[in-house]
Image (tube, rainbow, N blue to C red; front, top):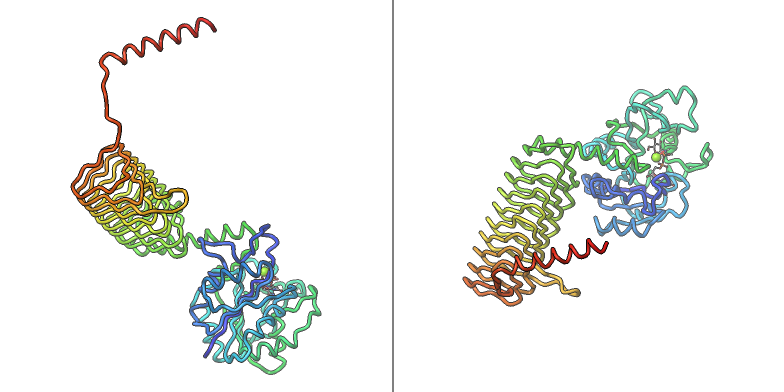
Length: 450
Ligand code: UD1
Ligand code: MG
């Protein structure tokens, strides 16, 4: 069966109080909309249509960045959820198969829930996803008759008796595409909100003698985001799930609640993560590494046995081989650090490669930027870079070479050579004493004048 996803994302999200469209606010550093698209991808959709309204262009850009074939249907005026789905009609012209309607602001949907909906769809014409609500609040209520769903009544239009129902509408549904559009044609806006309710298709289908049922999932999966507080709560839910998964997989988190993860963070077993570590997008850490406290990693790869931090910053393109060491106040960007190499203190290594077993002394800087362009620094194997060396890129230091402390390297250094580029030291006997005496006399004169 072919599947098309229709993801509703036209809502303004007034309560976010934001210039950014609601569905682009991130959870675990990935826009909510992308979470919804990824959840839907389990159904291998043949087409994906995002219904956009506010900030349509930016939403389209993000959606097509995730999947370039995504189609965009603009809903100029938000006249309700049925009206929103109707906007996808053109994009689904000629499509034969099922439509699954998702919301762009419910990022916690689990893949198996969608699979269960599709499974139920094989025995029914229309399937709605419902949940038992701890506090049904203003959700639409599902009016069941045995296994059949008779109708959905919106809170605003419900009687007291209906409001007492706790089985609620998540908003998600599955239905044959052409049938769904034909049901929507019969939806009117004669209700308390004056909107075209998608929920009305249930009763309309029933009147046509079609089979309608509801599949249940747990409430957490249907959690919607409407405010910054909801966003923070949703992120917290994601974080605690992701931490629990890592712990299950044999990763040690010394203080789990202080480790912040991205939705794509991958960490191997027996790796130890100390407190207060932040993972941005695109990080993989192999087994048996140690990420010490207060480190910040994004877009990087850390191999087995490496020890990072405390207070290290790994930026995109940092590739750390096995048993490397990156110590405190070290920043690494777009650089390969080969096996066993050490960058232990207060350094910046950017646009560089560092060979195996090389030692980078404290305060080393790769001067990679000339104000206009970036340049590369290549450091060979078994090199000793003295403390406070400035490597003015583009520059190469050969295998087994050494740079003297404080050297500004502007020319390539051949293998096994020692580069020294600093002013020669001169010691002047007795000068310190003389200078002290002069300065003390000066201070005494000034104190007297005051
Ligand atoms: C809807 C359901 C309700 C359900 C609840 C679950 C209807 C009539 N009601 O109510 O039964 O319990 O969701 O959260 O469907 N949207 C558009 N265009 C529109 C209107 C909405 O794209 O014209 C999008 C919104 O951006 C949002 C989703 O559809 O992603 C739901 O809209 P919302 O206004 O939140 O519906 P509810 O009133 O919460
Ligand atoms: Mg809502």
